[in-house]
Amino acid sequence: MIALISFLVLVSDQLSKLIAARAGMTILNTGVSFGFLSTFSAGWLTLALVFLVIATWWSYRLWWVKVPIAAGLFLGGAFSNLFDRLIWGGVRDWIPIPGTTIINNSADYAIGIGLVWLAWSYIRDSHRQHQSSLPKTDDSIIVKDKSHQDQS
Image (cartoon, rainbow, N blue to C red; front, side, top):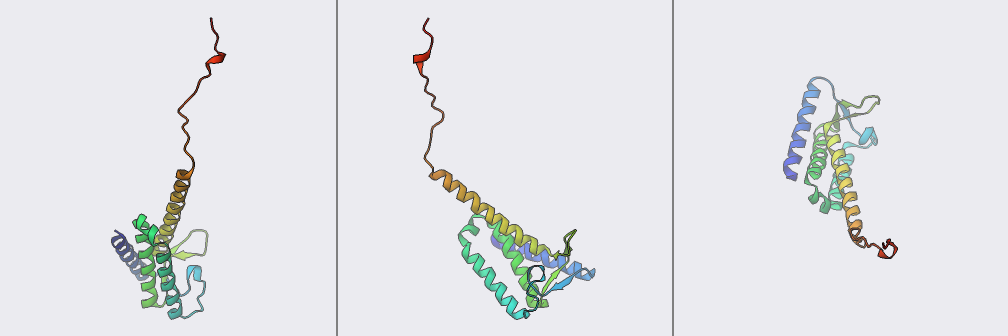
């Protein structure tokens, strides 16, 4: 499941970038998110991002198995952007965020959705584990005190 979703994200992102490039809508982002670190060489930045993807995967590998769709979104987006860096020397962005100067691509959204989904799953499961560790109470038992009832 993870591999299939990753593949679908990668292919759809690359196709959308190809279409946007043919329409003259893309910009080349040689930095990372929002153009940060654009003064670093493409080689060093690519190496750092590969390390970051591997470290993220390794750190959360047990959680990724629990949420394979989130894993597929994250990895597909990450590998699509890494592919851009290797081929183009930067990431091709083309989707403007209204009201800002930020321009992204569909891989960025896939990465973001995957990470938010992972965080939500982690928080939800942590909350469930905490709740299950609390002492159990049985609120269904109601004891009536008959000593205060009227005796006619």
